[in-house]
Length: 444
Image 1 (cartoon, helix red, strand yellow):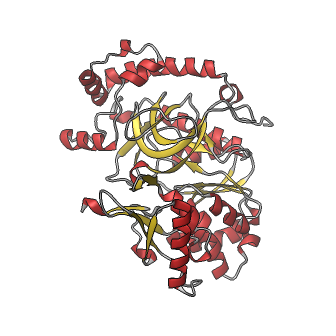
Image 2 (tube, one colour):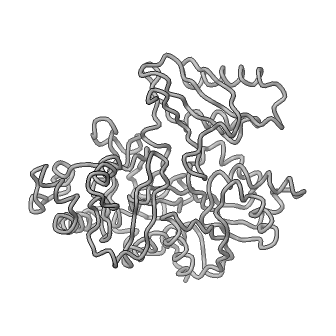
Image 3 (cartoon, helix red, strand yellow):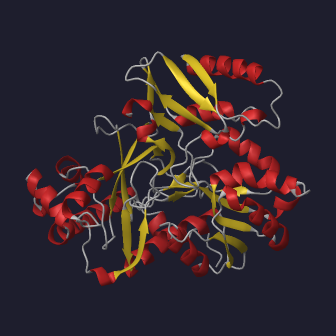
């Protein structure tokens, strides 16, 4: 296989043809869920919309209601249906069940049919192949069995002909095991690793074992960190320890099927394959479409999923999406997730997300891990409060560091800042591989 793109016909499809394909798939999907999903049927009946009312993409965006996880959780509580009325097939057709991470609340249940798994595999094949993975490469594959991402990633590894070594969930608790196996197996690629272990925990673990991280990790040519976005500062730090790696940052809610992995070197974003999932980037408060490149919430529609289709689902992912084709001729939009929409915080008339603070903390060796949380302490706030854990091994004067960070944040962000030191274990973790970078004290 010498081709540069996995599916060049689809990936470089002219925009007009892509839109025609999307409309065809949307019409089919709306009819399908109206007939087979109790949730969607009831939702559309209440909105006074029938499948035959959707004749254009504008009809779809104007008439089909948006819903989110809280709506589905409430439906689950009321009906006792673990799938919240989304399931469109008999239960015996669901060959893989998974839960969401629970980053923003009670985890929700997902499931896939055999064909859905095939669709997910195709998405990941495009992502990994276009990102540079090739047959015969020796790779580590993290065994996160409960997570939706693993079946499509593992299947893609096999379909691409990679030499795959299945290994532990890449969590900080297992980082010593990862370090030791890196020494033994020297993988060329890692198609799935948590951002935290990749950027912050694995290099120090190697150093603690008596090895220079850049020597051990120089074997890795490609790595796909998942879970949290890598800031520009973090990417610079990563290159010191992973000298030969091409970073293929990844993200996406499992329900969205708009899963992106960096595939092109000219932009720090990943393509969303819009023949599989339709992304709308909307203002989370008004649901108005934002301009290309502006921050907004991903509202996603599954175009081909048949098990548990999500239609105009508010993912709570806050991201930027760009519409111009890239230098490789890929016509599908490209974007990157920056935060959860619920993690926005307002100070006066200015709004911030954790990403804005993270890029500052990562400039300093004492806070390079970016272990912090923004704190919403009131409905209206006159200063930005941040809980931060510093590294005691490299921090000589915490008071001096706090003063420097406070001054820098106030200069960069343009608001008053209050920093409170906390211990690393005091930073909440809603799930093992993610920290909560936002704490809302107004909810009691």
